[in-house]
Amino acid sequence: MTAVTVAFWLAVGLLVYAQLGYALLLALLHKLVRRRRVEPAWEGEPPTITAVIAAYNEQRVIARRIANLRELEYPQERLQVIVASDGSTDATAAQARAAGADLVLELPRGGKIRAQDAAVAQATGELLVFSDANALWEPDALVRLVHAFADPRVGYACGYVHFTDHAGAGNQEGLYWRYEMWLRQMESELSSVTSGNGAIYATRRDAYLTVDPLAGHDLSFPFNMVKCGLRAVYVADARATEKMAPTIEGEFSRKRRMARGTWPTLFTGGLMSPRGYTPLYALMILSHRILRYMVPFLHVLMLVTNLLLLGHGAIYAFALAPQAALYLGAVAAPRAPLRPLLMARYYVVTNSALAVGLWDWWRGYRAPTWETVEGTR
Image (cartoon, rainbow, N blue to C red; front, top):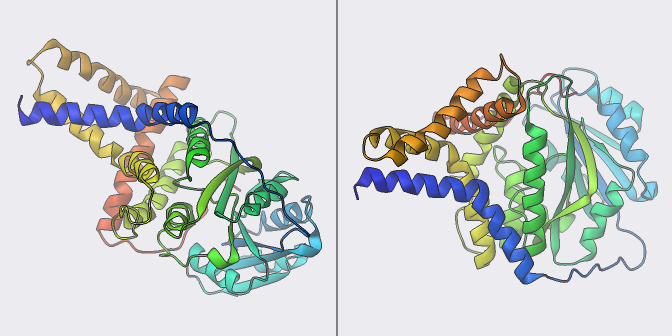
């Protein structure tokens, strides 16, 4: 067996495991372990909460976000709302004050993470909850999210995000996200989640971590909580709604920006270090995070080695067919917007964004600031 043959089958095996095999493994482990969930309850009054919204030029949605927080089924006297305006050049700060935010910080442009850090420094709550400015929470979302912290082992909790689609849009983020949320449910019940989301999550005030401003909380918080001896959980019934990017081009830009923070977390942020992980959680990190980020490069390796192996057996011609269908489907999707073709385009575009994000980071792109994607507000 040649090195090219080994490389081809290794790429095939890792891709199949990353995209399907890991999900099957989680389902099997879930059936074997069958942990009985104990739901502890808060004793005495519910904890005080500080809700943090980092915002950049969000005048169109910030008042609605604050009003949504004020309408939640939680004692309002125990809820502090802080808006950290990250160098906004519009009326975000004024709109936030008028809408009833307890504290509005007008900060120089420094990026989302540093804006959140500044807000946390002013927080009075025992628990910190975070949200995007364009997210809307269901009335009981905060109660359900906070309930997870009745378990003293929990340091981080994230909820479920429902992405609303645009009529005729080709973005398939909602389909991908439903699969992703199922994986996180399995991870949470077996051990801890390997990533969160920015629309609805919380942490204990005394467990808050100051992280690389490029990295973000979604990826950095869960694995670092585990390293600190805490659990990072997923609360499926704490629900939020957020608009997805209306175009695949907007989704590419969003994924590319996120990827710029993924790679430093992977290579220099401690994600790949097994110190502090249980064997099961280390397997989850390897499967759901490290291998997942290697997917675009595994596709390249599989395609190149497959082409080199043509003529060495019918199986290699057979293996090339689905790859060709994937890439041709992605190219054809704009002219024939059928669901399978749109899914192919989403898969190719988002994995390409991951690779381009690595290229950005490798070239020295270090800007922690962000721009809102058109159509998501």
